[in-house]
Length: 96
Image (cartoon, rainbow, N blue to C red; front, top):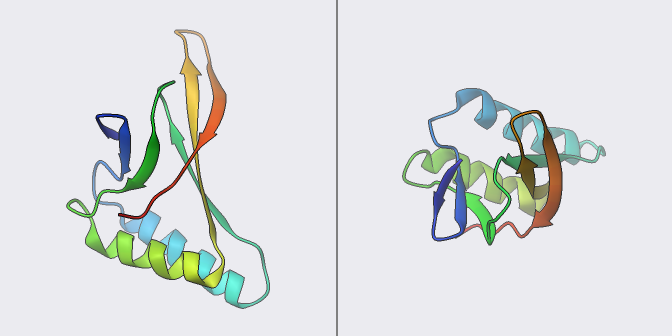
């Protein structure tokens, strides 16, 4: 996760697999299923999550189309210790 001033951006490296999954979820939702993309932030403090358009503009386009079709996008922060990672809270997702 790329973090800057409380804004966490995905991906931090190009992800062809992630792009494929978003497109498949869009198709599934079009066919009557429910679908969601869940981003896990391995830090406890963040204001909101977004897509790193500079790293992968195609993913931003796919996420926007997926949202328009009804795919939910959720982002969760975590409490991280040397022995465990625990989900802390949901934060907003904003497609900038």
